[in-house]
Structures are given as C-alpha cells and as structure tokens.
Image 1: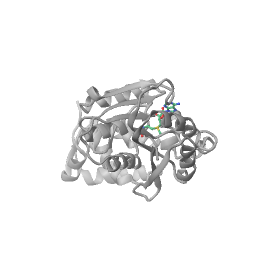
Image 2 (image 1 turned 45 degrees about the horizontal axis):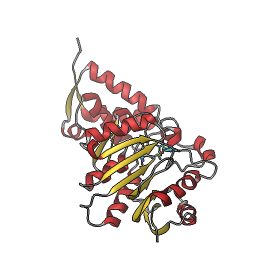
Image 3 (image 1 turned 90 degrees about the horizontal axis):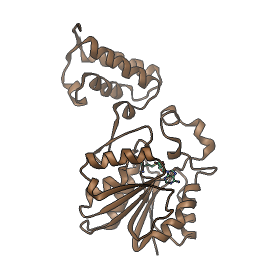
Image 4 (image 1 turned 30 degrees about the horizontal axis):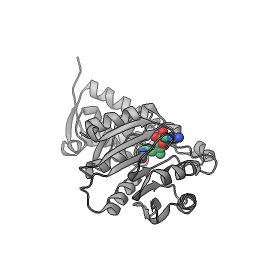
Length: 287
Ligand SMILES: C[S@@+](CC[C@H](N)C(=O)[O-])C[C@H]1O[C@@H](n2cnc3c(N)ncnc32)[C@H](O)[C@@H]1O
C-alpha cells in the first residue's frame, strides 16, 4: 500500500533542483519541474498551478529514478523519450540524434526560399535521423512527398514511427543508404544535417552528447568536413535545375563547406544564421 504524504510542490522542486544543480546541471529548476511532472504523469504546466500535491511513495520513487538518470547527465529529452521540434513531437531512440532547435533554421530557410507552398515538391533528406527535418517540411507543404536516407536502420525505424504518429507516413519513405549511392531522379529540395564534429573533438564534448548521442550522427572525420565532400557530388547530380539544397554546418564551417559545394558546381545563394547568430545553414542552387 502506498502512503500519501501532503507536501508542497515548492519544496519538492527546490530539493530536486538542488540535486540537479549539484550534478552540474545549469537549468536545474526548469528541468526539475519537467521531471516532477513526468513522475506525477502530469503536464509540466500543471506543476506550476498546484502548490500542494500528494506525493505517493510510487511517484516519489519515480522522481528519484528520474533525478538519478539526469544526474548521470542523460538529457531530459531522452529521459522523457521525446523532443519538440518545429512544434511537433518527435519520439527519440538511442540510434537517432536528439533534434536541435538550431536545425529549425533549415526548415525556415527552405520555406523562405520556396515561397508558395502548394506545389508537389519532391524532398530528399540526407542523414534523416529522427526524420525531424523532412517531417517538419512535409507538415508545412501539403502536396510534397519526401525520402529520408540514413545509414542507421535504428534511426530509420524511429523516423518511420514519427511519420506515422504525425499522420505523414503516406508522404514520407525512409530508406537505408550511404548518402546518395544508388539514388536517381531529380529533387526540388535536398536537405542535409550531416555529422560535422571533427573526430578529435568528440572526447571533449559535454557528457549529454558524448555519452548519449549516436556516434555516426556526430563524427565528421579529421576536419569535420568529410560528409560534405561525400555529399557534394550527390547533391549536384540529384538537384533539379530549379531546386534548392539546405545544408546545416557547424560553427565556423560555412566558408569551407560552401567551397566544397562550389567545386561540385553548386552556387551559394545565402547563409542563414541560427538564434544565437551562428552561421548555420547554407542555401545552394545550381547558379
Ligand atoms: C547530425 S545527424 C542529423 C539527424 C537529423 N537529420 C537531425 O537534423 O536531427 C546525422 C545523421 O546522418 C546519418 N549518417 C551518417 N553517415 C551517413 C552516411 N554515410 N549515409 C547516410 N546517413 C549517414 C547518421 O546516422 C545521422 O542520423
């Protein structure tokens, strides 16, 4: 039998935040609120509205387990099992990168470049991971269809589940492949958020990334640019004459990546920055 203890949200949150803070978590109070809500099975906003709660032994144990996981630096999104991206909910898995808010810059860039949204655009997404980029675009372009490519079958399974959950499975397919190998046809939009962290920097990444993100999603080779070299000829071959490509780049990589694309015949139209002002997205065309 579980014993109910009358206790205030304020004191539970204060204790939880102190524990997270001691483990080196900077945004401890907000994260404590998210974990308490998860332990109670509540929406996070409800925690703010209820100063008094009954913390049963079962929910107390659940909170304890969640705090232990976060203190071991597992990201909150992975603990909860999902991430909001482009205001859509994406399920996560160990094989798929946790989508980053910065990557929404690619979605914004493509929508700005396309203008009218009603055409039957064909979209190709290299390194689709959770499917977040392709599915966010399909949610905005009602007649578009798309293909997501990834080398990881686990990531592709996650992307397929996300497409189904978002009601977009009829317009999205997910195929295992090594970048553009074996692909044919012409595509109106090509997306890529490839791995771009130089291999020697991987050991120094924060634990949330180093311990919990799949390595194939991170490792960009010796200088971080290997995937761009592999992708450039594939994009040049597969992009429709009036098509656009949107590529994510890491901080400081925009010029080098644009140079690699230019050698393959892809012209830089614009560089868009993310919310922190970092050059994040190359928009390319044929001229
Ligand atoms: C940085 S993650 C991007 C995931 C997702 N598009 C996003 O923006 O959150 C890069 C993805 O590329 C995939 N990948 C790495 N090498 C690949 C290759 N040679 N061919 C296809 N996909 C590859 C990884 O498995 C990973 O899912």
